[in-house]
Each structure stands twice: as C-alpha cells, then as structure tokens.
Image (cartoon, rainbow, N blue to C red; front, side, top):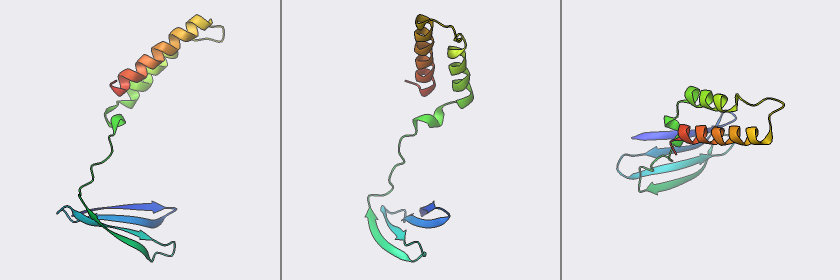
Length: 98
C-alpha cells in the first residue's frame, strides 16, 4: 500500500491511497481539515509523468550553456549572437538527450 499527499500553505488538501490491488481512494479536504470528497479509484497504479529532466546533470548542462554564451560581449555582431544562440540551443538539446 502506498499513499501520496498534497499540501497547500501547510494544509493537507488531498490524499491518494493505493491499496496495491489496482484500487484506491482519493480524499480531498476542506480548509478546516474535514473531509470534502472521497473518490474510489481503479486502474492503479497511475504511472508518474515522464520526468525528462530527472536524468539531466544540471552542473554539466549549465557549464555547456555558459560555454556557448561565453564568446558574447556588448559589442558582438548579430552573426556572433546568432552563432552563440545556436550553440546554446545545441547545448540544451544535448543536456535533455534530444
């Protein structure tokens, strides 16, 4: 059995309980903490959304982006700016595995 909870401003607003047999409940709460609704769920577990960024090495991605923008100065030409932006786009795509 597993559960997840959602808090807003320190208050419990929703709780989902997975019974481990494909069923579960989702309970929502009023601001005073009393139960608002209880919904019976089927077809569990609900897979988590794709987390593309979970595998991204943030430090390496930021370093690559910084390197792509390093040649730019206050007097860079539009061609230099375009080249730096294309390099930045490539660095972001590489970081995301695209």
